[in-house]
Structure formats: C-alpha cells, structure tokens
Length: 118
Image (cartoon, rainbow, N blue to C red; front, side, top):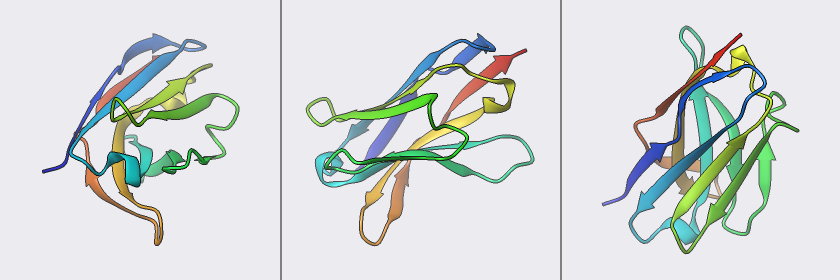
C-alpha cells in the first residue's frame, strides 16, 4: 500500500521560508513522478511543482523563482523549498505520486497547512 505523509507546514511571515517534505512508503517512488499541489479556501487545487523520476522539474508561474522541488530516491522523499513567501501562498499543500506518461497522480497525502502572515 502506498502512503504519503507531508510535514513542514506552519505559520511564517511574508518574505520567510518553509521547507515541506513528503515521505512515500512503498516501492514505486523511484519510478514515479511527484507533485506538490495546493488548495486555498474557495479556490481550485493547483499544481505548484512537479519532478519526474529523471529529475526534470516544472513549476506554476506563481512558484517560479521562489520554490524549488527536489527528490531523494534513497529516502523516498520529495521536498518543496519555498522562499520569499507571500500571503497568497497560504493554502493546504499536498504531495502526490503517479505516472509520467500519460501524466496522472494516483496517490495523495493528507496535506499540510501553510499560512503566510502579512
């Protein structure tokens, strides 16, 4: 059974940084694409960043230049380093794992709250 557990969320002032982690149990991690999503109240869930098994990354426009996604295939963990945080980054952040082609996310974590105060 595949399980994803996020950690690292919290309350931070605008301009601050947070590092989210997502630990994946199961043997599929190294062969899968990983993504970080976020959903704020009243808004649709959006893909913030993704990283393929080969290490190729992609970012939402809102995250480019501020967020960095990385993965450790030995530790079965994906990270999201978030710098220069803004109040509009406040949301529940969830990690997901899935297939690269066609791109789909099959398993999800419970999410971790990120709140950025102004």
